Length: 297
Figure 1 (cartoon, one colour):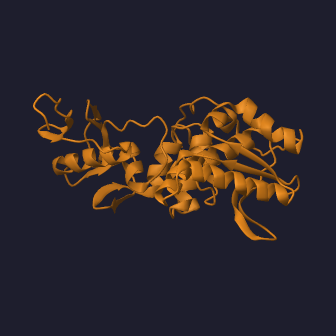
Figure 2 (tube, helix red, strand yellow):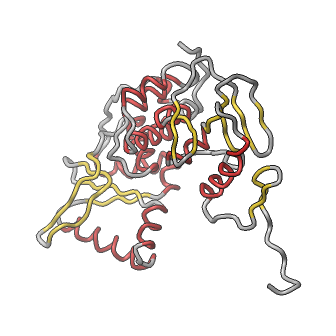
Figure 3 (cartoon, helix red, strand yellow):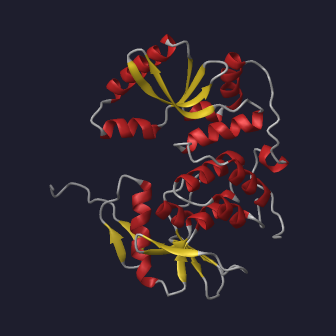
């Protein structure tokens, strides 16, 4: 390093602990924060909320990853500063476990904590991921009972499907449920005369319509396999051509399309028609705002 080069900005993990170089991934940086905080924890201290979600690999929206989130089971008041958010002991002690050597709330409890504070689409994504990671549906439903957003979270737990492979695929399905769109089959394998084409995210069998969500994760995974972005896009185009060759219409979406609910729904309606299905969602799940506060039952 030349003498006139600027020194790298060091990141403060906790008092007296600095990190010279930040990991590129925000979750990995948060893991460093948790490791730095661990020596200060007593026996009754567990990671929870966003920190527990990082440990379990659950999707997050609007996450506060600059602070380490902890729960002290033996009492005390909540506390929040620039580096940590400590939560006071709940009336009912949560189920806890150990993940990667770190004491934390269980997968189902962590998912429930997130789901109660999210809107329906993100809550459904967390529930899908929790089941995919091995949570039991009955346990998840039990964990979301009572408290803020309990009805919305319970609805998401009941509708969860572990076949959904990404958070935004789940959000897509959440919009379909809210908008009365007939639900497609998930992760269906497609073939033609030449053999296997691929597994599609969504398939409306009756209408011969395929839906694909092209998220950053898919592109990253392709690059990790040694494929350039240009090669990945070319492979997608070739796959779409084969799907059209067996009579399928292919719809592709990215994250910005899902945030614009109207155009997303219109793109589907243009192919399957205007028939509306009453999926029987609770009123809270139909609300695009944050869940209202409710008394614990």
